[in-house]
Amino acid sequence: MKKSFLFISCEEAKYICDKSQYGEASTWERFKLSLRLSWCHITRYYSRKNNKLTDAVQKAEVNCLKTDERTKIKEQFEKELAKYQK
Image 1 (cartoon, rainbow, N blue to C red):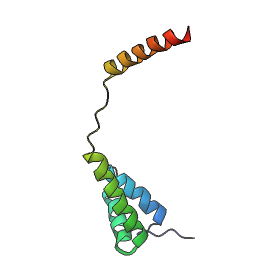
Image 2 (image 1 turned 135 degrees about the vertical axis):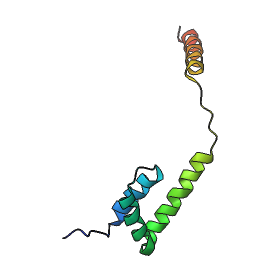
Image 3 (image 1 turned 30 degrees about the vertical axis):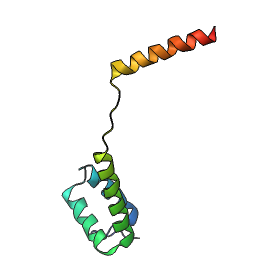
């Protein structure tokens, strides 16, 4: 089966969509993706859901522990655990 120059499969479109979300897709790949999005409702749905997920992750204000805080908590946990293991 001959691979088309402009038209891509749904799986390839999903892969390019993921790359595009992280700014890793080339201009040519984004063009082929937009061509696929113009007529494929499955790819459009995937792209829309992918955009919603990306927006949710970017809007989430996740506060993580710093490395020194994490090590202090780990040391305290190990001390308490050692008390009960004796």
